[in-house]
Image 1 (cartoon, rainbow over the protein chains, first blue to last red):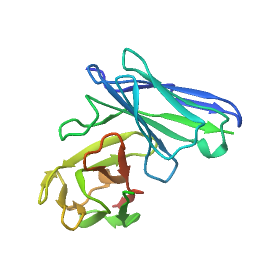
Image 2 (image 1 turned 90 degrees about the horizontal axis):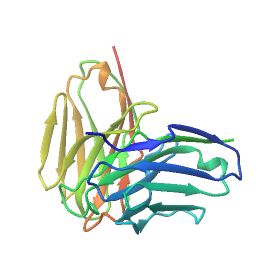
Image 3 (image 1 turned 90 degrees about the vertical axis):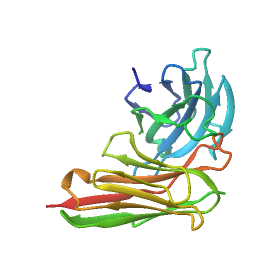
Length: 116
Length: 113
């Protein structure tokens, strides 16, 4: 069975540009969460989507947005890129909201974004 | 606000030695996770700890959870070079899910021959 997939694997952008990152969850999973991991730090929660609705948001500016499609795949969009947005962006999928033990998050390989 | 603190943040040790990584968290939690991350790679799930007193072991790694002390430990026995990696603990807040996982800063572990 395929795990969580993300595309692209690597991306280089210039300050001020916009970027879209994509995530496909494990088949049957209805929730996608996004995390940002800056070099040398632990991942930080950005968003959670469930059944195409935003269910959770971390402490990130409005330049960050996301959406979930009817097939449960998801996109993370970042506008007006800053140098500080350079990071590994991780997507995680779960069956539901992850509220109960057994409904765990499974992480994808990540997208490495470099902003120059 | 849930805070997760790991220590040490950096650990260099010799093969064959034992050591423990500590993870403290600030509020009640349903679940605590330990992950391994190799350079440039994603997170590999090691353990999920659900209840007070939970202990799980896999090979040379053993994790435990004390919910009263809000403390988890990851113990490494007779370390080998292949265990060199960064280890993260992460906490899911009680009733959470929509707040995501809160991670510690990670422990960068180097095991030298």
